[in-house]
View 1 (cartoon, one colour):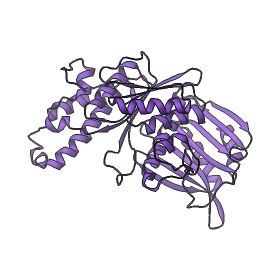
View 2: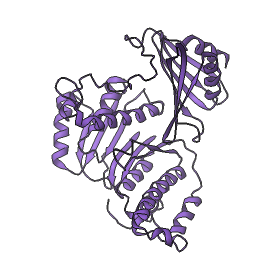
View 3: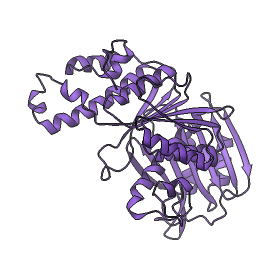
View 4: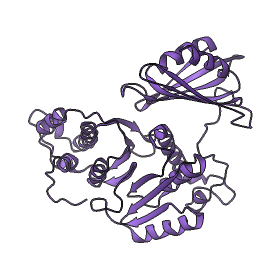
Length: 385
């Protein structure tokens, strides 16, 4: 770890923009850790933001403490990205502890780094930089300012791109990446994905948006053509029966209603998709099935039963994914004050399948048969998405 510590001593200063520790070896670890410089009480410290499940924990360190803490953290992670006004560096750590450092000189940001404790939030898409699709979709004005009534949508787009940023190491850069967005709707996030991956990050991507509404799809096609997004396609169709591609690297399904999410997840598993990002919606299926004599006093309250059914639905989906070799996290997509439909299932294919007896015992206990489990067991009974 001496090589790593030398690198940390070099970059832990007022020129640092941020460090991001990512790709944990164990799903119990935080999804990522961000470190940035902050001036407090006249002195330079380094603030670590630890993203653990749906919470963020902050802790401040002096330089010496930060070096030791980051080196300790890295024992449980595979990657460290450093952005600074003196250069950039990527650190990869093998399972056996071998450190690989790729370093590139030159300033990353021409602006002076803001070291204030309460600095303005950094968004992946800057709020004062005009982006054509944001203007056309009503999020920005023609002058490039965020429309006040659409700021929540702007925050949602950036939050989604942060989840994409976290999984970038899982996507190949030596070939075209195929991404399927089921239930794309007006495609705010579909356009944002393409803009971020192709134009900002330089990935070769082919993104396909799928939705049932022909008029919406036609509008999206026109916009994609207008922007010159030649590898962004939109198709009309349902999730259950789509067969336009044979291999998919990433599947995105946002607010696909009720069991439509299950059909999308089933497709993703069968394709062997490396990454799945799913925000479920309207989980009604188990609410009509769930019964248990022991829980009868609790399930007698309609609102409680509805919320329990929704949470159990997504937990069982996560378990099915884990049984198929995915490492799964249940994360908060956006703040609860904006929408109650804020759970995001993030799954990364790791190849090690998990015994499914645990979730099957839960199904038996609650007398439920969720669609995803039935599809994966080959017992799907013809229900439509």
